[in-house]
Amino acid sequence: MQSLSIQFVDLEAQQRRIRERLNSAIAEALDQGAYIMGPQVARFESNLAAFCGAKHAITCANGTDALQLALMALQVRQVDAIFVPSFTFAATAEAVRLAGATPVFVDSDMDSFNMDPLSLERSINRARACGLNPRAVIPVDLFGMPADMESLEAISAHERMELICDSAQGFGGTINGRMTGTFGRITTTSFFPAKPLGCYGDGGALFTADDGLAHLLRSLRVHGKGIDKYENIRVGMNSRLDTIQAAILLIKLEIYEEEINARNEVASRYNERLSNVVEIPAISPGYRSVWAQYTIKLLDGDERHLVQCRLKQSGVPTAIYYPTPLHLQPAYSDALTDPAGLPNAEELSTRVLSLPIHAYLDKGIQHYIVDATIDAVASARHR
Ligand SMILES: *Cc1c(COP(=O)(O)O)cnc(C)c1O
Image (cartoon, rainbow, N blue to C red):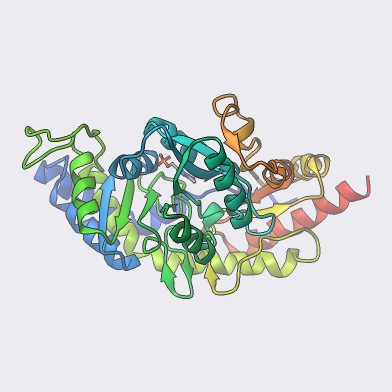
């Protein structure tokens, strides 16, 4: 066996590449002394909007706040049903409760891992029958692939619901060339370090084409400010991206497109060699994923456990996103769900396994990971 140390997410390799530029950008921010809302924040917002083609980009403190700010801007209330997937990170549903609205859990598609539009329709009927007002849907671009925006935009328009896209994992993904950040009323993202575009702390952003909403979001992120923060015209939050993180992100955004392409090359190599071994992640035609995760499906939980242990012995770190769907979590087990239940979310949580993927994964290590995976699956199946 080779002696190598494989990282699940390798932030060091990227840092080595841009370290000098980071050092001078951080030094510049220190020299300037404008730690909050310094000029780098506005510059980053303008570059970020240009990158994805959104009219407005508004940064904030993290991806969870971004979702909460979006819901606050839309003035959601408790009677409002907000439809979210169950098979996602907790923040998607958490923001709904933080904003004082009612989450309703929708099932996911087995192949795309994303919100199933048919389950959404059943869930809307259920919410209405329970006296709730279907108000918004928050699809997630899970593992980096955009959600089925065509179907979800159609359903939202038909039901007069708002479409808020949680692209914390999917920023930079595209559908027929159109980038996340330009779908729905508002898109949110996160710059948590391990996300595809991450900073060195917490950070987040919102995107919208609506001038009024953009203005409102800029007020909400600074205590509901009016002309300045000492005029408070509504209840807001304290949710700003700090200047140093904006300075870092300005540099990281410059190499992001290249990194997305590198991630896609790794995914293609994995796909080629793993497609007849396990169920590989399906990318819908015309879609580009940013590969926040490369997630395979094993036959069942027992096989996954054996494969994961065996890979660990070979020095290949893996992760399970997500071991428990949200409707089965204590904090959310009282929430409404699709009346047909959420069988796919439950099954996915027992079968998924994410392999290491990032833009700086050496080709030899990619093959080592694939070899180890093929080996681990074979040994699990011949037990
Ligand atoms: C990471 C993540 C968030 C939250 O982002 P933070 O910046 O950690 O608050 C929200 N939704 C999804 C789907 C995420 O993966």
